Image (tube, rainbow, N blue to C red; front, side, top):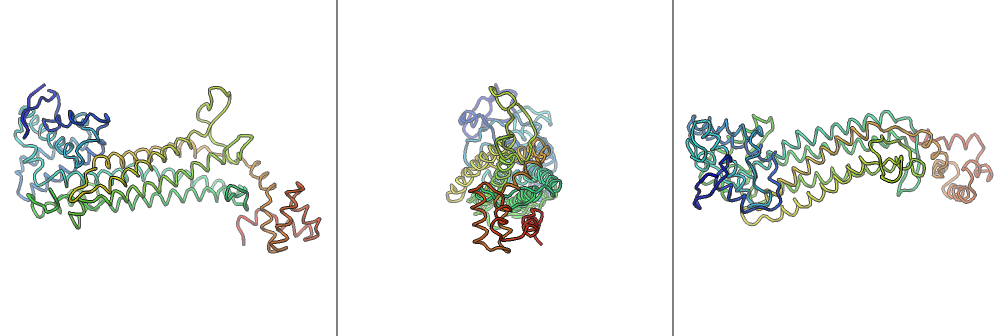
Length: 460
């Protein structure tokens, strides 16, 4: 151990740790979940600290020597090279002050090492006076939150959804000639093609991609520059704009200073909006996963219109059983995501006066949602959708047996007569054609033409 000092006095810190007394106090104060704040969030904070140092240098508030050292250290944090030195639990001070001080101390100590000074010496840069110059946890943490979530949406979720969309779209084209029975209310309906059904799934995912894009857009406004309560005390008036410009140039994203800093720090409505978009994406993926496992149910006592790829044994007691495990995985991911997003909604309402105090939990919930949704969508595309094959014989048999083909007779014999035909066919276990001919409602050629499923899936 080594002895460090902060504003509260001396504190023993592990000798090998790059953090200091403030972080160690948080480690001791919050032994709650064993989960540290998301690594992606820490990396984004590193990027923000880099942008802050560059901005303070340009504004003449930080010497070029100090700024260069801080920027180098901050980029190391951004690259994830020191993740093990960020041990603070998710359930900590609601402003994320402990995590902000954690990164301030790590950067300061990296600078000390690079300068040949002892760890903890706060030489040549001070964690508060230099690394945190012109900043407060109250604007830095929400800024890092927004930046990290935008980057996660762009780099993880959207590419994964695009991958799933491509897989579903490919199947929709491959299955475009496979006619099957439609279902509404879980009951037989008029026919469609399997390709048309899969095109609906592909479009759901396509809309999910657009929703993720809208989620990105609402996070591009940053709280930086508000400092303690939104007034901007102790910072340069051009600081926020400079930081946003630096972040934009580095990421290629159009970050901008918050229109109102009091809203940007007191409320987390933007994050709640993101949670809403993720909830909608999860709902769509759940529908797709459930439909696919139902379409593949059987193989002999279910619908079995499609054959799902076998990925693992399905039972410890029933030999040869194979289950739709990829659908089950994705459904669980989506349930988990929606629970996390409900937590974000609850967090969003707990902004009291000038600060929301649930920021670390919001970061955890949104990053966990994005990570799981992205991984789930990609695995589902590769290990389920890619291997789906149509069971053409089953599709044809179910179409031929369906009574809802009677719908096509409405223009020829009227709704009431068509209903009579359907009920009699069901009661007597006869085909629609047999009943129509028995009742003398149409001749055989007209019946065959009207009941041709091909004319129903693409009506002229």
